[in-house]
Each structure stands twice: as structure tokens, then as C-alpha cells.
Length: 192
Image (cartoon, rainbow, N blue to C red; front, side, top):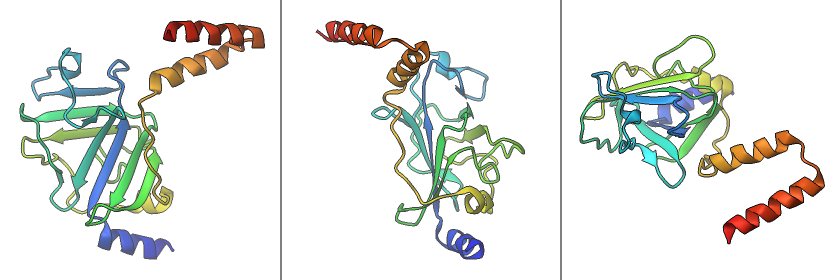
């Protein structure tokens, strides 16, 4: 199976879709313009790859051309440095952009810069004005997809990340049923 899968991916994988949950306030994903300007600190900066509906950064890379598809960033060069904390989805796509194989969680750093050896926690995309990614490999290495990949699944929205975080906080408080009932009533009042 392993040999067949690597042959299939080498023959059919034309694109890589990278999806990362984005929370501007957590400072785990930073952007700069090559002049060390921290763009994410600017009030009006919106990453050009942000899907505002799902609050995901979505980048589709043409593996042969080593370029971001449909790159349109008027300011020119953009560098993204991300500590993804196992939160990303990396999906290989065929020529028609149909999903082939996927890794959820750690970064496949044999394919995606900075090619760290270790835990697969970081991504560095240095994108030139024409969409070319600096240091993207000329020959893709799909070995991590073969070792750790799976049949592609839909990428979950990040839209509710604050509500999910609040819910986890409530769970961690170990409230009684009476306290939970009170909290629910208070939330209903806030909605009205």
C-alpha cells in the first residue's frame, strides 16, 4: 500500500491546501513585510489568505510552480510565521483540486518550510509579490503524508473558537446543575 500511495501522490498531487485556524489575538501567527514590520499589530491589517467566514487562513500552493494560487497582495512581499500547535489541515489536491490525501495536526515539514526536524509545529511562508514561495522544495516530499496521512475530511470552521474556549472554561469550573441553570438564564437575558 505504501509504495502504491507514494506513486499515486507523486503522479496525481498537483496542489497543497494549507488551512490554519486564525485568532489575531493569540499572536501564534505573525506577518511581516520583510522590513520587520509586524503587520498583525496594525489595526487594519487583514491577512490576504483569510477566509473571514470560517476564520481560517487558506493557502493553496501549486507544487510544480511553487507559488500560491491566485495570490493578490497589493503590498508585495509577505512573510507568515506560524506556530500552529497541531491545529492545521494539509490536503494534497489533484489537477482539478479534488482532495487526495490529508494530514491533520502536525505540520508535514518535509514539504513545508521551515523544514524543522522535530515536532512539526512551525510554518514559514515567505511569499514574493508574484506568489512564489521562497525555499519551497523543487521536488515535493510526500513521505509524511504516506506515513501519517488519512482519507481527506472536511476542514472544520474556526468561527466558534471564542465560544468553544468559553465553554471549556465553564466545563473546567465543574459547576453544579443549579449553577449551570443560572448561567443559562443569564446568557438568555444577554441575548434579549
